[in-house]
Length: 53
Image 1 (tube, rainbow, N blue to C red):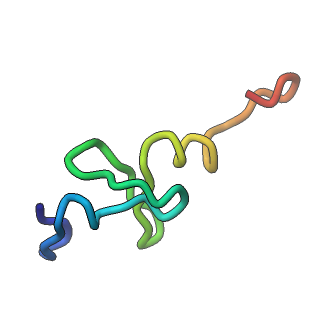
Image 2 (tube, rainbow, N blue to C red; image 1 turned 135 degrees about the vertical axis):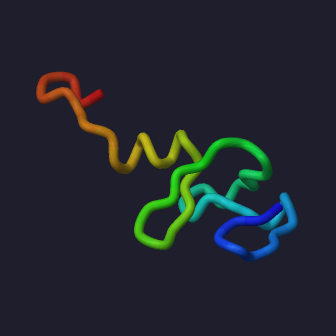
């Protein structure tokens, strides 16, 4: 696969937090780091003031 003009093996393209291979699944880049959707949401999503979800 290719990201930012660089070639990656699918198994080597990993989330910076959980280290799981992203492969061809969706991902979110932020500040030069790559996050799987779940880790990105856990780290950056807006939280409810009452339940923190």
